[in-house]
Length: 279
Image: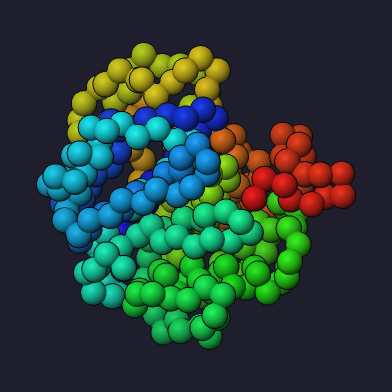
């Protein structure tokens, strides 16, 4: 299966060294050599996606991307081991769709067998992967359920979990879904997360076997990292349970597991009539 990485940060960061370690799993320390992709967001909230069919650990485009040190509050990275769908850019994650006036990016780890939901003209599938079908079905179901109004965040995440639980009956369905402010992680088999809240001087990387100075931090910054498998040594990586969903906003966790309540920081994202204002 594939490998996922999501980063949600309070302030724009350039996690090039962490991405470089993750890219080692694309053909060097692991066999996920069937392409890679990464989504980030500019200051206007527009999605910037870079993809390649080369193994990430050996790709010149990946090297150029890391050298450019792109900064963003949100990143979704994916390295692919192809199972469903040919090797092509249209089948390479992350996928992107516009929804509620914002760009949403999606990456999936797992295989869905016999999964062929009814197509929806609102979110059409362009490739032939189970992952993109699931993404479009997820957005279609949310759009049909809420029509033209934005739900409360806890209602939105609960509905995403219900749909995801149904999809996961067809196989493994671990995914990261994000826009320029929110990041949602769902686990059906294996997904880990960690939070950095205090500056550290050095970080030990798993796949590069190196210790590097942390330049991701600025004083007071908070950063959430979600990955298929832990990327650093010494940090506490929390495993997500089967069917668990978590909502993060700019480096902070707002909603966890199945609890239908919001943290105080999440309440500030809602208007007085409980309309969603951030997405």
